[in-house]
Image (cartoon, rainbow over all chains, first blue to last red):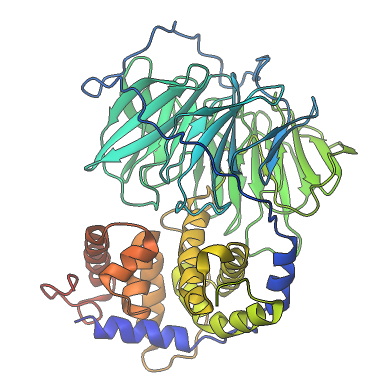
Length: 373
Length: 172
């Protein structure tokens, strides 16, 4: 019997002083919500060609890429968009002022060296209940459907690479998939040890940094080099956590501090003070760390940006999770109404430009965030 | 009711569903401010996707499902970790056994979200395994195993008096 547990739960809940329902706020917010017509995507989800052989990486004819220094800037990849964001079913490519129409609502944006990859679904609700699809958006706004995971998984991309990585689970076996978005073909399937029960996804979340894929399993974060198939435990990065890795740097969060560590060695590069509910992220190249004030801080939310190199910091006003990153990753940007604000991560100097009309107060999905629900 | 509700009708729904959703949200996230935010987001999403709700009677259940999934997405973000220590536990007026009550919230905070959700949905919301699987979007077997794991951990944290060992208790 679990009557005692049920009684305690009810006692706890019934003792709460329930605040008044903010009905007018909810109804008012509903009026501003994007109600664009949803266009059904074509059948995109087709089984990808499998290259898995016994859990060992199989590389499909690509040369070994030279590993860049963890602190090196992103460099120049002409097909990686400089500024990209999505509102509803439209993607805006800022500097070129090109737009792309998506077949469904944009959910999350991934910078790759072959263009912008957008995860979409039919409802606009990122709850994993509606199948996800993926679209590659070129610099001119041309779109092409991609094979990708339709389930509720957490993919990752590296702006220097033309790949999207994710994990799958089949009968408890974890497999990492690396997909070349330029050719729309899988280039590697790799078995990863461990179990996954801690998160709510269909498979462990991953982070792609160069050729390394970090996988957040229950007890460790594993790192597997998809080109060589060599797998190891990521030093200093705990298990049961979302792998926040970019540019060879990783975030390790404690109760009141967060460390930015060298992902290869686990060596601490920077320690940041954080408060409960703060969220720590990295710029796409790992040169900057951001601290978003948490959900409990509804008075004056802001985003603090730290240079990993010297620990200097700036503060930017705005709501938590309210900024994207430009490519290369020197600036943060956000869009409000018809104003785009771009701020230098190193100095905090900001300037504004005119954003495309019609955005209103709609929710904006930004490129450059390592994860968005 | 097949059409979209008027503002007044939706406002009425919000008022009716708010208290129970708030209590469930609090048990899920362990913080009253976050619970308030969570319910507000869930009801907003329910409003935005009314076409999937179809009738007012199903709205509360739909909002609950959205709420659990939204909580999951919050927990996935980098600032949330599996075991976030809570420096200040919320106060309460439950006076029958304050020690056990404090321990209950601490123990719930030690559970991974899905296990916490399973405990809350099954033993607070009194949902069946099938209904819980529907809310969480997972297999019934997963609900059973997560229930078993959660109760095992709660037994370790709270003692057998709260979550006693009993064969078959999780398989209904």
